[in-house]
Length: 304
Image 1 (cartoon, rainbow, N blue to C red):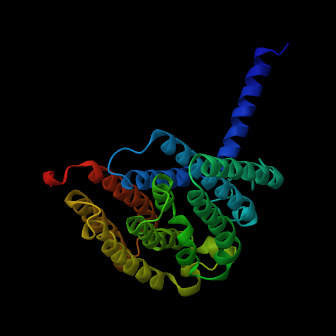
Image 2 (cartoon, rainbow, N blue to C red; image 1 turned 90 degrees about the vertical axis):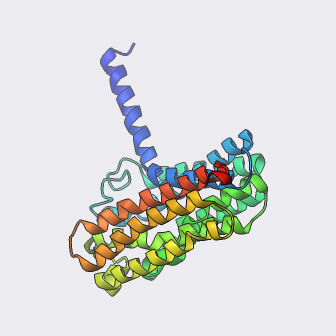
């Protein structure tokens, strides 16, 4: 029989192992992906999303996103071992082996695809699989190491979740879903380039051609400002097309104004904390924008 100490030790080991595998899933990133997908589901219908579709599509998209994240961990493990930001991940620390991580990733992906194919619809499954390959393979293997425009081109995969949510409910594509795609697609460059400025030396050390490495910090700051201006303009589209109401417009302008403040501050100030503050705010910005889209969808238009 096991002693209490042995039982406690086994429990701690299992908890630690679970934490290692969850660490492969990039849960904070996946949670934002799933949230934007759920908002896409609700925006696709005037009333409530059918519960079975909501549960199965959320699980399928979430599992697929986690699978892509785990594959990314494997493909980037050698880079992660060098960069300070990522050297504590499970693979560089030797907590999980590459074969174990790949088996875990493929298991998550297979489960996600099965849920989407048999529980939702084939279109959503195909689009989800395409975004998984786009991020885990095309971006990570080719674009990331090939061009400073890696984030711009690869951003298409990361912008797909609200479209996946929309098609999960309706079974087809709609112009409004593409507007949601365009918002995230435009948001991605200033979001990642702010981080790239903060981690410029680390990216240079591992020969990843992020824009601050290849074109300099000042040029990247200008690109962040230009893309942020474009983002604010793109976020007007839900209101201009009648997709959303005045409540959304006010929220989008408020959130966008703060994002512009950070982008301008980075242009005129050399304060070293600004890039990371901009990066952190950009996550709050996207979460807040989609939350306002959701709330506005169910607020009677006559109230605003």
